[in-house]
Image 1 (spheres, rainbow, N blue to C red):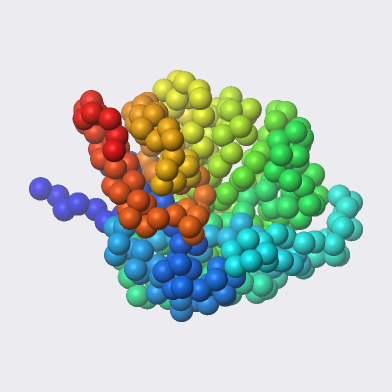
Image 2: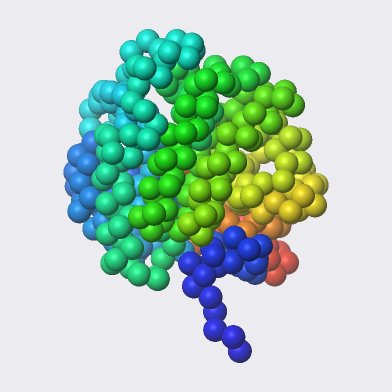
Length: 356
């Protein structure tokens, strides 16, 4: 009997289209480390020692296939010149001087090639290097970068709801953002990250031309990640954006794992379309699943099981960083329950009673 492969070997195999029977389980559990270390999130994000220590504890407690080394939706925007203003210990907003959509906005921000040296970027890179040395081949090391659509919208001061109402992404801002995203991704994989999540929090309702433009911005980012033999994952966390663009998203041939938020669409048909294009699919679990008192949890778990059965994802993750306020015992129980649901779906078993 051949020895079972490590999570890192499975991730490397996916780069070559070698699909494991069991999906990689890579939930994004990062901010919760601030509670483990008993420090405010704003201090936690700047302390590589506390981050590394908490992640080792998270690994031992949850026993997932990977560790979220650094996930911060404002990392690149702050490094490019934004200011984070904190309200209390854990809530913040990004403040930027008024930036127009004209080409000269570049002069008001740091150059994209500077992004990895500014703000908290060196902290994120340091954490990956430390965990690479500490854990060696034991766990998949993950990190998140902000996708060009989301980052450009953030730099222009747009709310995610405004992004969905648009039919395009501002070309100068998106090109600038894509350069910064690529620089950050390159530094993460150089430091030792095995999986890079490119996170788009919202997308406009794309025309064919605008969609092609967005894809063309992502291609260099995907290429640099793959060059270092790391696995790129396009994580789309907004179900409305996925539903509005499903035909273009699933008919595109992606050189990455396409990982959409759960949507109320016929996932079996969509997975067939994607596989016919040679695209690997992942699945992003909704964050409300991890709420301790979610009223429709049983129904949500059944929906997840049905979608998993139809989608057959190569990778399971979460639709963003699990909030720092999440109950750890409940988190562990939910993760184990999802693992069992995935295993049963693969084996074609019926669920045993209602979910607990």
